[in-house]
Length: 416
Image (cartoon, rainbow, N blue to C red; front, side, top):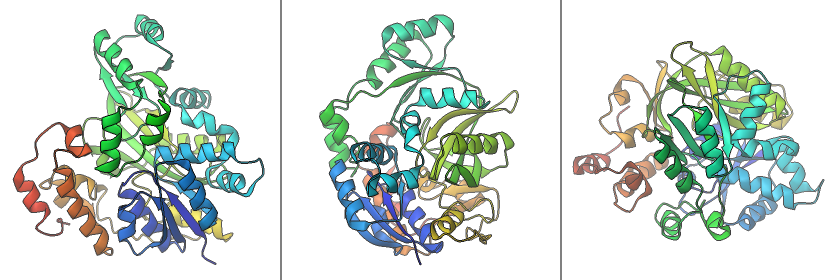
């Protein structure tokens, strides 16, 4: 029997569409609750789609209608929404049990939502973490600056894609970052993101005038890395570790990665999964210190990340063993479906959107889903919106994209 998996999305990212394909390959039926026009609707892997309206009621309604065997949140707001639905549901109810089966022990939900508490737990587990402290206000910032030197990162919880990160090299920059990141979302920004970018994540925080928890973190010099993990009731099933070669921008998501084997990262993932009794998919971000090579844990993404779809064979195929657990069958070694002919992977469409002439599109494995032409066409067309002055990507980059890139985007499929 094919287990039914419900993907929960509050914004229109492409990686969940790739995850749906991997789940279908592993023998799952895939439903999704997502905003209108999400790229997942262009894939043949999707069975049913339920509309996400920006409010918890739409996720709750999808849970009741889809009656899934398992849930996978695909962004931070989706995870937060599921945590809140669990808190509002009667203990022992079907919805509460489903969320716990999918995400892990509810006793640890609050600890997963804040960077400071997660890293404090990680430190107790013997995992290397940079000096990090939660900032309750300007006085807490002053106290931290009195004991530590700059530069440092100011980070807002509940954000992703580098949006809630500021590098502070002076006291004035640190104070401005604290003020900016601790403010509720603005009205213009909220509605522009919802209407133009189909990103509904700011609606509820805007309505509730929600202020995120802010932390400050010491800068560790080195190369960035991450791992994507699948687990079941606290037991690690598979892990993909990678070094970040190229980013979308200074703090944005990785666009090119190099597969690595790192014992410290794998050990950290194993300890985190066990300590928080996790199930499903999650990701960890690290810095590999340049002088020692030690892996410092920066933060955790308690959701699927953009490399979870990769099917790289035994030990590095995240979805296959998870699907086996859902079926109640013994995991089998799944053959690699991602035909990687080198260790470096250019993620599609991220690297192509960043630079259509990037040398990595030729020198690396370019992860284009050719088997889903509808999704490829969606990504090509979406680049035209990214070139619009109104788009979030354009405003975030803060630079003009040449018209030649637009014409190339509309000329056909990207290079492999």
